[in-house]
Amino acid sequence: MAVKQGRRAEENALRDQTSVPVNLLYNETNDKTMMQRASITGAANVEVEGGVIDEVTQGNAYIWNGDSGQWEKMAADGPTNALRTIDYAHHEEHSGSAYFISDVVDLALNNVLDIIIVTPDTLKWAHMLAGLFTESETEWWTYEGGTINNAGTAITAYNHNRNSTNTSGLTISYHTNTSLSNANIDTTVPASHLEHGIVGSGRGTGGGDRNDSELILKQNTTYVFRAIANAAGYMNWRFNWYEHTNIT
Image (cartoon, rainbow, N blue to C red):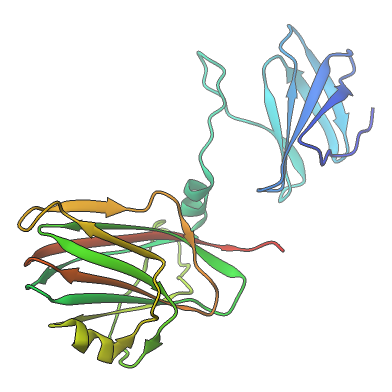
């Protein structure tokens, strides 16, 4: 039985050579097709476009590998037969397309830290998570758009996969200033912001904040992450992201 790879969420009409139902599950996000045979005793061959899968046994799931052009058995946990998978961001770390920056600064009262990120004019977009942890009360903003008047100090982004030689397409730098007016001389920010918050419940009390939903940065755009110390203290920041070519 020759069948074409399905493009629907689930194709229930397929059966193997012993008439056992077989499901084709298509994941549009990752452009992958997964096949699973119903849970009965025995084994059979299933012929699909791209080749024959031998010994399709009970409870096993198979995925179409577009790179190799083969159906491959998916890994499962022995005691439970649960599929062993990783999320997409974790996959990007393995593939060498995920990066991070992290550091600590000591800010005096009313000091300002600006982290400036410039995205390239390509369809390879950055999917970013950010975290901020402080010793004392700190107010922060995220701005989309801005003008860099002073190049500042460059920040090197590191690959999560230390075996990879891939480098980030983002250009990142930072400034520290003694006041907001001085910060605006180095970097002009727009009147409106994307995000705004305060870390720490009161002066002298530290805290942490992070975004749980990734921000997909707009191409060919300058982003400014700004933090002002409402009380003196250390501030630790960390940005994690992966870079993925958008499919239009």
